[in-house]
Length: 201
Image (cartoon, rainbow, N blue to C red; front, side):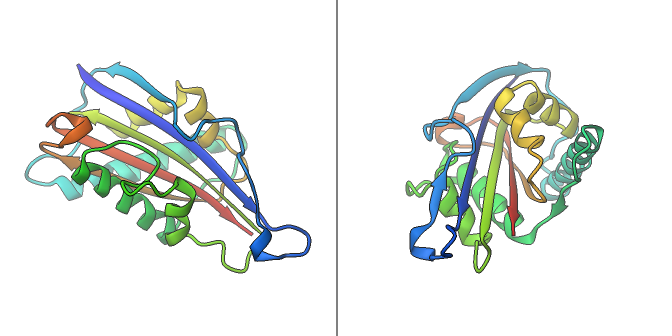
């Protein structure tokens, strides 16, 4: 058996009619507390994850599988498939790596920075009038494959809603595999997946 924990969050910023950057309206796109709902699930371990010999290659295969499966799901629901964003990808990579190294699991950064502020460093609003981002997280010990990751998110209302949000146009994905992760992970062998969703217009 492998322990799997999930977390989901969504944040939107909109410029007012006067387009005054100092008066951005912040609103939660849904009522998920910043403390983040965490759901504990149990699943059969998968053999498709990273090994000691090829962790980076296996992680890329996992990321590609999640993207393919998520876009197939969105097409089934009449939604636009997501394209990879280098900015969201950088945000996801930084966050997965930080969680693995520092031994915590949260949408906030280890220094307490909010999810929105963290993602905006890599995926800024810039001159646009609308910016919205969402995030799904999961960690599994020891491993997870793309089908299981998608299935777990689908079985959680918050994560399902994030994946099937019509406004998303871009995504960044990061999977990291750590043989012995500290802190929250209790020294376990873990795979951590971050999916950052976004739209700017």
